[in-house]
Amino acid sequence: MAFPYMEAVVGFMIVVYIFETYLDLRQHAALKLPTLPKPLKGVISQEKFEKSRAYSLDKSHFHFVHEFVTILMDSAILYFGILPWFWKRSGEFLLYAGFNAENEILHTLAFLAGVMFWSQITDLPFSLYSTFVIEARHGFNKQTMWLFFRDMIKGIILAIVIGPPIVAAIIVIVQKGGPYLAIYLWGFMLIVSLVMMTIYPVLIAPLFNKFTPLPEGELRTKIENLASSLKFPLKKLFVVDGSTRSSHSNAYMYGFFKNKRIVLYDTLIQQCKDEEEVVAVIAHELGHWKLNHTMYSFIAVQILTLLQFGGYTLVRNSKDLFQSFGFDTQPVLIGLIIFQHTVIPLQHIVSFVLNLVSRAFEFQADAFAKKLGYAAPLRAGLIKLQEENLSSMNTDPWYSAYHYSHPPLVERLAAIDKPDKKTD
Image 1 (cartoon, rainbow, N blue to C red):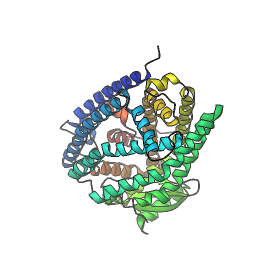
Image 2 (cartoon, rainbow, N blue to C red):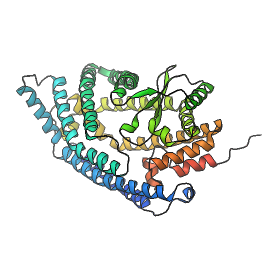
Image 3 (cartoon, rainbow, N blue to C red):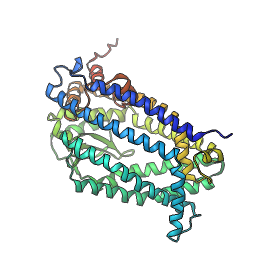
Image 4 (cartoon, rainbow, N blue to C red):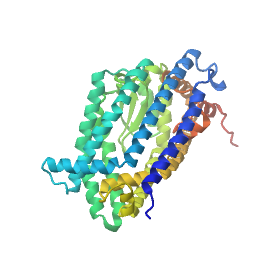
């Protein structure tokens, strides 16, 4: 008797949902607490705390509904054989349109087109509610309905342009890869990721936002001097019009080798009235670069990708695995989808470990900025961003340990305030 892979996968998905719902309930209880954590009393205003609490509870209620609908749909799609049914229907559509359904690349693209259409339809109500009800209710949403749908259409067009060549290449590699299939797949995806990292900020991101050079002035001079002192090869310094869509703020870096760029959200500059606070945030980001966090994370992702492809090569020819999910044939894309479902337990463990590492990196970047003399402005900047973004003030320790890639504000402030160890 064949092993019931599909039933096992659905069962584990439900177990994970129950566990994560338990964590969500713990976090929801923490969000309902009527008082600030002791370290934040006198630091965060009561008005901001009340607004943050209301925003977090709204998002929490929405999250419960969204996750419940998602697990119902995902489980039903697998358990009732919707995937193989949809694969067959996409083949029939190709025949009806006059194409060769035996061509796996065409069949896969037709299947993905249907999946994309379905996901857009099912995700749209949640996206609209999140953006135009929750975000708008709490003063964050700045985009119009037209801008929302224009962004969605642009995203679909980009997927149609970029997706098919990548999918076609993956299918050909799997069909002809032989014993070195995992290495070929990994090498191809590495090239794709590097190309996307190169073209995204230059060609794709400007389709959605406007990037302008940071005007000459004291802030620009301070950032350039900081970058120069650390030998950071800063080539361009941009401000992005994040305020056209949301009041949330951020800053990030990108670029390879000697061609680095820093991007500041205009909302970050607006919220941090003191320029030293903005510079401190950049010092934190530069800490990630100086301490090689980005490189370590990239290497970790590449190792995990190679291991995943190695695992896929071990199961891709398993007829029992495909038949358990209702497939009589063994299409490449379906094999990848099924494999991703079968390794869900490992994915959750890996995600938890990566979050632990990410939080450690955040503490190190804070310590780096502190060592440069930005302890006070960094502390003030983190508090300001927490207030202005209405981030959760009370967090459940289990929930944050499982989900958060960044430490809660209380922990970051405690680390910044901790006296440096004296050396002889």
